Amino acid sequence: MSIAEQSTRTTLLSRPRGEHVTAVGLTVIIPAYNEEHGIAAVVGAVRDALDDDGLEYEILVVDDGSADKTAEAAEAAGVRVLAHSQNRGYGEALKTGIRHAVFERIAIIDADGSYPAREIPRLARMLDDAEMVVGARTGADAAIPLVRRPAKWLLTKLASYLTGIRIPDLNSGLRLFKRALAIEFFDLLPSKFSFTTTITLAALNSGYLVEFVEVDYYRRTGRSKIRPIQDTFNFFMLVLRLTLIFRPLKIYLPLGALMVLGALVVLAVGWYGFGRILDNTILLLIQVAIQSAMIGLLADVVNVRRSRAP
Image (tube, rainbow, N blue to C red; front, side):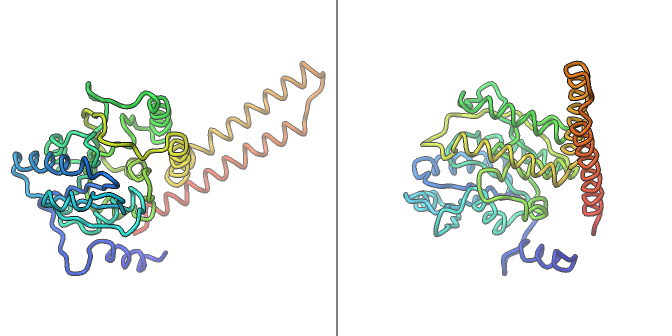
């Protein structure tokens, strides 16, 4: 994509026709799918928190093709509602909200009542110095289901290694960020639950300041839409894909080192086990190691050039 095309696309994404964005205030986006029993309570909690703080704000509920009366319940709560005609995914709901946000500062919070809305003003004040502030679910009252904890721990450890930054919570649904940050990575941001994982990794790998703040996490209202096995696998693949985009050496160099180690193991087994050197296998492993290192270096050069482009 040329620089001119990037500029045109950014302009189109930045503001729906006839609307104006302002840096003062906060847009709270609540993506909702079949949350008719919980949406009103979440809207009320967000409104109470922001009214007490005196911050100028708007609350925007994006109904993602719900089959129940989520949209009606949100409208009855007195907030602006945008509705998808069919279910398009959590990420697409957030993108719709970002496109239509009145304010430059964006907050997102789930519609199931699992996140403490009272924390939004505190996180908003931290956005003066950071590009993103994440409510990390590490508080004393964090009711994360036991079945999801092992995969969450492993995924977080992997992401922390690949980014070189300690990440307490990779995919929290309570976070605040600058609208321009989301627009920058719009092409990368997926349609499903991995939206939050993607924007976290993209921001960290691009050198933006991301603050993690401890918050509580409550048992949700209604039934979860997350598919534990499939979504966990998708999260792992996403982390690897984003690392290949932003920090390819983190993947290719360890792969090359693993091939060299494999060559040494084959050398030892051949020499002590068979009394000869298995030269063909060793040469193949060394060749793969060199190729991995060269591909990683080339990808890293391309990434540096891309990141420095206007």
